[in-house]
Length: 85
Image (tube, rainbow, N blue to C red; front, side):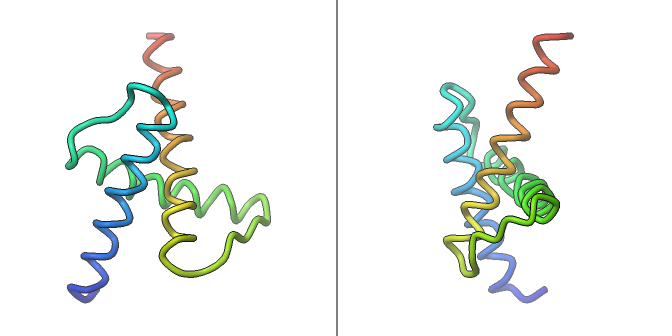
């Protein structure tokens, strides 16, 4: 992985984590946690969208949308688990 790819991954993760926190009111964390949530969300979003057969497009905007969808799913599941526990 090149340094440029790593920088793009971190930016997409940060934006997606922040957006997911804003969409799920009060779930925003520190920038480092948002990056991790966004990166994990990118994997979840790509998996879920692939299974559903949904293609948003290509490019950085599509990557941010996919990662945000995955991050929202991740935060929702974590929230449900916290309520149960």
